[in-house]
Amino acid sequence: MEYIESNKVELKEMMTDEIKKEILAFLNTEGGAIYVGVKDDGMVVPYKDSKERDEMDVRISNWIRDVFYPNVSSLLRYHFNKDGVFVIEVNQGIEKPYYLKEKGPKPSGVYVRIGTTSRMATESEILLMLLDSKKYSYEEDVSNEQDLTFRFFNDICDENHIPHEERNLRSLRMIDKDGKYTNLGFMMSDQSDIVVKFAKYDKSLNFIVKKEFKGSLLKCLESTLDNAANFNDVSAVISPDSWQRKETVSYPGSSLREAILNAFCHSNYFIRSNIKIEFFDDRVKITNPGGIYQATLEQIMSGVQTYRNPGLVNILSKLHYIENFGTGIPRILQAYEGAERQPVFNPSGNFFMLTLPNQNYADPVNDPVNDPVNDPVKIKDDRLGDLELIILQTIQQNPGISTRNLLKLINEKQPEITLDTLKNNIKRKLQDYIEFRGSQKKGGYFIKERNQ
Image (tube, rainbow, N blue to C red; front, side, top):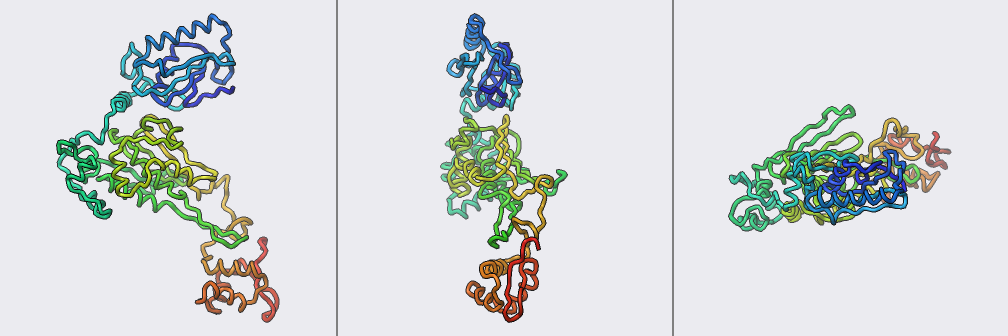
C-alpha cells in the first residue's frame, strides 16, 4: 500500500515514546492510524524479527494499561500488516480529554491533531472537551443577565404567527423551570452579546465593506443573510448556437444561505469568538467557533445529524429559517454538483471553516476573458434583451427571412411589437450579429458568420 501522512495518518520509522502523543492526539480528535516502520517519505522499513514484534506488542499493551487515562482499551487495535509495518488504529474517544496519567488533564498531558501534526492542547480546548464529555449545554445554562427584552424576537414571532408569552418561552427553553432566562433566551434577547463580522475585500485584500452585526441572534442572522445576498451576483452569457441566455449565480442554489445557517446553528456560543463572513473575488469563507460536534467530517458529509444547540435549531425551524435540519451540507454539495471547483470543508480545532468558490470568478491568468463579440463559444452582451434574443432565434431558424415575415413570427410571441420597433432594435442592437443579404424586395436576414 501507499503511505502518505494526513490528518488521519501518522508515519513513524521507529517505536518511540513520541507515539504516545500521537495516540492521544487521535483519541482527542477524529481518530486515525499510526504506521510504525515507515519513513516520512513513505518508504517501508519492515519489522521482520519475531522477537522485536513481540516486544512492540507488549510495549503498547503496557501503554494501554498504565499510560493513558481514561481507559482506551476499546479504542485501540494493533497488528502487523503484510508489509511488516506495525499498524495502530485509534478510534475517536467519547470521554475526552484523554491524557497521560503522569501529567494529568493539563496541556502537558493532552494532545490534539491539527492537520498532519499533533500538538499540546490549550487550556480552553481542554475545558471544552470536559464540558462536551459531561454533556454540558450552554444554551440550557442560566444566563448571567436576567434583565432582558425581546422586541426583535417578538416581531419575528408575530410575522410567523407564533405566540411569545412566558409559557411559550418556557416550551422553547428560553426560560427554565425556575423562571429564569437561559443562555438561549439571552441569545434571542435584544441584549445579546453576539457579534457577527462581515467583510468584502478587493483583489489586494483591502476592505470594500466592513460591518459588524450585533444584538439578538435573529437580528444578526437576518442582517447577515440580507447582506450576503447582495454579493451573490448573477452573470449572463448567450450561446450563439441557440441564442438562449444562460445565467450563472456566483454561489449556486441555496448554498450560500445554507452555509450561513449552518454557521449559526453549529456555533459554540460558549467560546468568546465571532461568526465571520468574508467575501473575496474568488470565494466566500464562512467561519464559526466550534468544531464538529460529536461526529467526524465524513459522518457529517454523509448526513449524520448532531445537535450542539438543539433549542436554537428548534426556534429557527419554527420560524422557517430552516426546513429540514441536517440537510445543509448535502444541499451545498448538491448545488455544486458537476462544478469544476467544489466547496472546501475545514474543521480546525475549535473552529469550522467552509469555503464556497465563486462560480463567476475568472482567473486572469489561467482563464482570460474572451472577446465579448467574437468568442466562439459564448457571448456576454448586456444589450441583448428578450426581444433581441427572440429576433436572433427566429432568424437562425429561418435564414433569409424578410422583414415582414420576421415581424409576423415575432408577433406570435409578442403581439405588441410594431414594424418600427423591430427595425429600430435591429439597427441599434443587432448589427454585430445579423446582416441583410439581397435586394430590398427579395432579400432577407442571416446570422453573421462568427469570424465576422
